[in-house]
Every structure is written in C-alpha cells, then in structure tokens.
Length: 93
Image 1 (tube, rainbow, N blue to C red):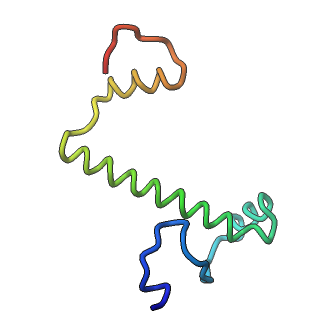
Image 2: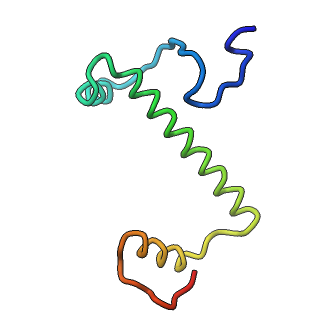
C-alpha cells in the first residue's frame, strides 16, 4: 500500500516533494517573511488555510440552497456587533 492509497486529511500524513511555480515577487515576499528554509512550511500552511476557506464556501453554498441567502440587514447588524460597532439593543437577527 502506498501513501497515494491512503486518504489523509489536510495537514496529516508523510511529506511529499512537488514542483511549484510562483511569480518572482510572490516568492521574494515569502522568503522575506520566512527565509529560504521556511518556504515549504509557509506554503503548506497557506494551502491548508485555502482548503478550509474552500470547504467553508461549499458549506455556505449548500446552506444557501436549502435556506436561501442571508438577510443583508441582519448580516450588517451582526457584523457591527462583532466589530464592536454601535449596539443595536432590541434588534434580533
């Protein structure tokens, strides 16, 4: 049985080398942040975050199919509360 036969969740399993092509500016910015030896770990974390975001987008799309899109006014009220904006006591969303 090879590693390709096992279904590892993101972030788990043995490491595997691949070739990745990045623009010079992106690679430079990454190396400035983490150095030459930290690029792989940085890209692993970035890929993991993107997978989480993709999964969340899919979950939201599925929710919207069942329940319809969120009410923009209710979202704005909750966003203001989370951001520490003006309190809207008595406004339920």
